[in-house]
Amino acid sequence: MAAKGDMSYVWAKDKEILEKGECGGAVTALLKYALESKFVDAVFAVRKGQDIYDAVPAFITDPSEVASTAGSLHCGTLLLPKILKNYADGAKGMKIAVTCKGCDVM
Image (cartoon, rainbow, N blue to C red):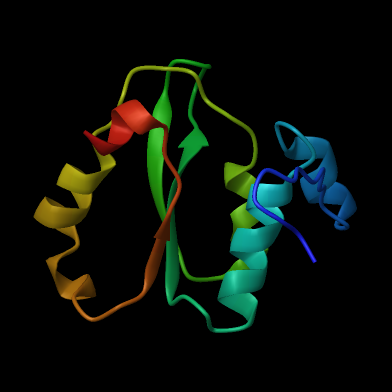
């Protein structure tokens, strides 16, 4: 059993996610599992666009598409909560997993 302050190192078992993920793909693997197990209805993340500065919002309901968002993008913030509020009004009542940096949450 883990205690407060314990640390664990985790990584994805899925080879594609392991290779694409930033630090072992653990977050991406957890998001894929959450969709597969119906723990969440959708994942809202970002995909790499034309270059490292081009973050493209992605609303994913198919677990096989989660790997396309693997890895960190260190670019300008997209204000993901604002995008969800303004454009995903039809998603009310859905359980949505969101990945973002702290500055994206503001």
